[in-house]
Image (cartoon, rainbow, N blue to C red; front, side, top):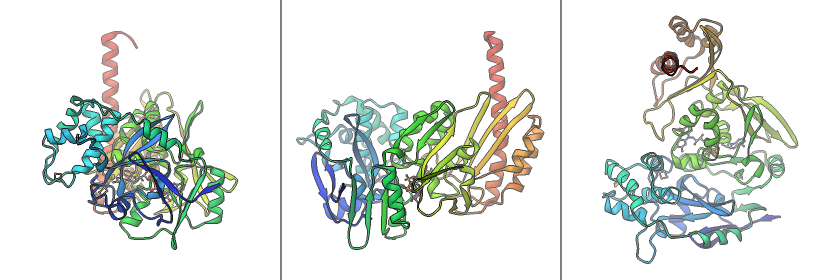
Length: 484
Ligand SMILES: Cc1cc2nc3c(=O)[nH]c(=O)nc-3n(C[C@H](O)[C@H](O)[C@H](O)COP(=O)(O)OP(=O)(O)OC[C@H]3O[C@@H](n4cnc5c(N)ncnc54)[C@H](O)[C@@H]3O)c2cc1C
Ligand code: FES
Ligand code: FES
């Protein structure tokens, strides 16, 4: 059965929407349809956090809260969820701890960014009532403030543990959310656009056959920018975030299989257990708001030359399963990218899952993300090296780069200069020279071609020095303790 009404909770009240333009963002709806103007519009591209709202979702019988950017979230994707905005926080004339702490720590000056910060703090308070500096910094990573210099806001976050815990028990929300039918697919349309939210992979596959020009929507952190930045109207949208098969993480003896619609924050803990370096990299991918929504499937599907996951997946020799109708095929992530934004994806096909081999004994993964800021910034260059050095010799070496060509790509000449060669500075220097045969990078707003090439070469040397340093430390530790 298909439902034609989108239902969600506005705080703790059931709210229904029909016949809305599926391109409507949550921010637009709040400000223009509901006159809830507490949520601000700064950039309309997910960069500033002024539009941060909190979404609650039922997970194993209770509500889990996360901060998201309302400006790049399409309204229909709220079906079955709870939306909380800054207007909902004050209870019985009492400010919420997330608000009171901002007042007490002088975290607001002009106030434009404040509702966004308060909502990030609200989500932090729900998930970590007494936050550490790390969790506080992570929660605030997607919010910009031009006035305060941030210190008072960080103080406000750390001070939140001093207030009585949020007494709102979420039972009302849990009960109300359980009344919304999330099993059946949803469909919404107005005169010019239509929106489908299937709940199974079979349904999704059929929809793509019926509507070959439809745009797939996962987290929307790339796709929504086509609407908010390029002012395009997407005529048919298929939301994959409710497709159960695409939301699973499976494990075999040799690999992890991540459904394409699994968000970064849903899989980061499993991935970092296998590859701690990958966990660190994901913590620098976008902001917390972006990682709460964005998916690996969307990162690959967007096919940007500066997407962070593809070079890592290529270096790890990951594969992906693509589905069209009832047929599936598996290809290497490395073979997916043909040319700038040209991929192996055929008409009616979608990315079902990504299979990442588990860490091989003796291998090391090194990932370097070069961007102008640590948090919430797109890479100028991303390098991923996966290597095995045994004794004095390089037994295996795979190198992949983002930001160095029109597509994320392996550095075959560089790899050949190291494979089977001694693990020495002079081999690394040859590999650095070989990079010039692999890539002719472009200059753009993020970096010049010369900078990109220099930095790529230097990252090779950096990995060499770091690996040798950690070997030396291991040897010293073994000598001191006497244990191998
Ligand atoms: C502020 C900001 C910061 C960002 N920072 C980073 C960063 O540091 N590093 C980085 O790599 N990216 C970054 N991004 C880009 C974006 O967040 C990522 O690319 C993210 O992984 C996209 O996932 P999504 O689920 O939001 O994709 P969506 O926007 O939903 O989709 C992206 C594309 O993939 C297609 N697609 C989605 N799912 C499928 C599927 N199952 N099969 C086939 N095609 C599909 C869509 O049709 C669309 O063309 C940033 C974006 C913003 C707005
Ligand atoms: S308005 Fe800037 S992130 Fe949404
Ligand atoms: S208080 Fe002015 S932008 Fe933050």
